Figure (tube, rainbow, N blue to C red):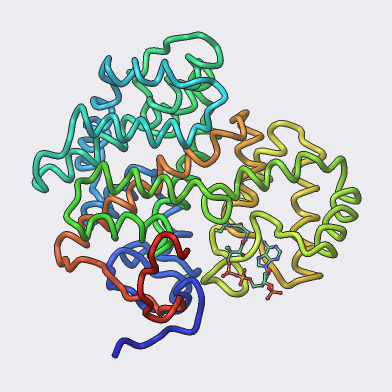
Length: 373
Ligand code: COA
């Protein structure tokens, strides 16, 4: 008989194997293929980390140059996809836009066989920023942006399309760090969604489209947007403390805090917090960063709850002029690497994922005649 699990949300259950990352086990708390995320964020560009996650090794200089040139050559969007994006209203949520964009791409450039898995992944990695920004600029500014920029990195490409000018070195570096921190995280909800889909031997675009849907929720990727909406309401650190105390009293969930696996800290927080502080100094902020720090102090003092990766991402993105509703799509631009690598791993040693359920419904009973119901 199948074992019945007592914990909700499959917490603590090993649901499969992976060689891609460890969470809460070694180093600062998060490793990608044996490298500490802290080390990677300090020393690498995002494209190096994407290469590592997808291909299993860190690239040498020639390999990195070649990979970046390949991604750069794949930024363009087919007309039929632009046409679809132009029909999506400005009020749509950008995660829904990306979900549709990914799905449409699958119709136009579908994965003909699993031999194409690396190619279709690289294509998505290269063109997701184009999809987000093409729609955003068209629906909000009425501009059809040329999505084929010559920017050196995915992060710079995104900022350039969004703001119409090349980003500063500081902003490009922060994008590298942010995309590295979000790239992979073991069996989180969206990755597990992708793996379940992959286990049916479905195509890469379906796996990624499903994962985007899972990441959209505020308990997962949507937390950075929800955190931003909260902190921008606070006028000062003292005001933040007063409001937070009220929220805690009312037992409200505070977005950007807590984690399903980490118990004392999220290693990604320390890194993005540092960059948020640098950006605050760069823009001369005297409110948002101190407000964020006070929120962190209050949550730890009152509840022993710590900031997860999303909390200081909110202020960091805000300082770079990124609209709040584009926060979670940036997460997708990065986590796509983890999702695709997990799909490839699942395919390499597959059995359809099909758990059982503990039945809590009615006992067996006959169907009554319709006149007796
Ligand atoms: N604000 C307030 N209380 C929180 C909290 C938060 N952000 N996160 C956890 N708690 C409380 C829970 O209410 C619960 O209290 P209880 O035992 O009195 O019911 C306790 O801490 C345990 O948390 P729990 O919700 O069981 O943890 P989980 O593993 O089920 O959930 C998260 C993990 C991440 C979903 C949860 O912490 C959360 O919802 N955080 C906010 C959303 C977020 O930032 N998500 C991004 C994750 S990277």
